[in-house]
Amino acid sequence: MKVYTKKGDDGTTGLLYGGRVDKDDLRTTAYGTVDEVCSALGLARAELDGVLHDAVLTVQRELFVVGAQLATDVAHWDRLEVGVSRVDDAMVDAIDARIDAVVERHPLPTVFVVPGGNRAAAALDLARTVCRRAERHVVAMRRAGILGDDAPLRYLNRCADELYVLAREVEGAHLPSREGA
Image (cartoon, rainbow, N blue to C red; front, side):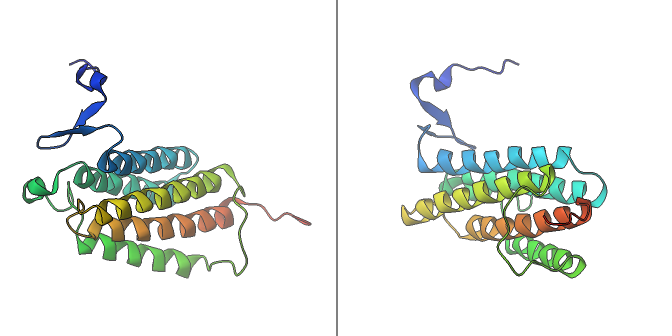
């Protein structure tokens, strides 16, 4: 199998289960931005181990589900499988539970946080901001009437929150005490 197909040379790309759209279509912009989130999370995960590594990997795998749903025309959503290629309320609820668990382990700061406490936290904060951009693109899909349901939007909203609390936990777990910092 070759990586290149040459089908996209005309500026279009294929959707899951059929159809082609421009590479700057709202869908491709949204799921492409979700892919960026996943890649930024790869930077964070490469710096982590144990529970925090696994937490980031979980989010990355879930982002593939979000991306698959966004890369599918709504007319074919009935072909998607919950948890594999379609987001459902349980995925969103699971994020809420994970956020609560992180905050219980590591209470949130009460002041604004400047990203960059360490490499992993900085990568998580970068992923968070890209996730917010993906969320904005999904809002544009909804406004254009091509979203179908709001589960991917709710997921991305919660995902950005989870990335924020994970970044704070990573800073707390890995930063030595710095006087005068």
